[in-house]
Image (cartoon, rainbow, N blue to C red; front, top):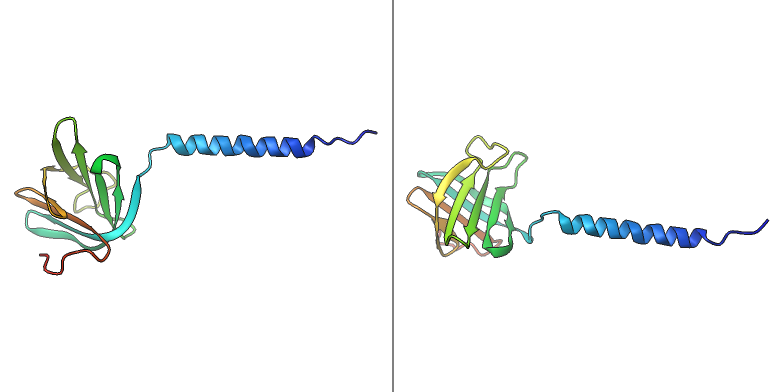
Length: 134
């Protein structure tokens, strides 16, 4: 009976096929350009909601999401609309809902913060928060 030597080629082919499928899926899924551990601050209508360690998910174009390091985190999304020349912010509210339904309005940048009359959203890389911030 002849020996079959095609098994190693089949295993190799399946390995390449698997790698191709995984790579294709990874490229088609939306992911953050960069996630960093940082320090965040969120104030809405005079009430501080976030003040401490957080994750900051940076997107292409400068938009980002910051979230508390908790099981059910409060999070804020700052969206840069280059085509319109505006920046808006949304959050999941003090109830810590699973979607950013709460509109915080149009914000403008001031140093490490984005703000308007009612809201101040700040995010810094770990260790770079100004000592005199408040």
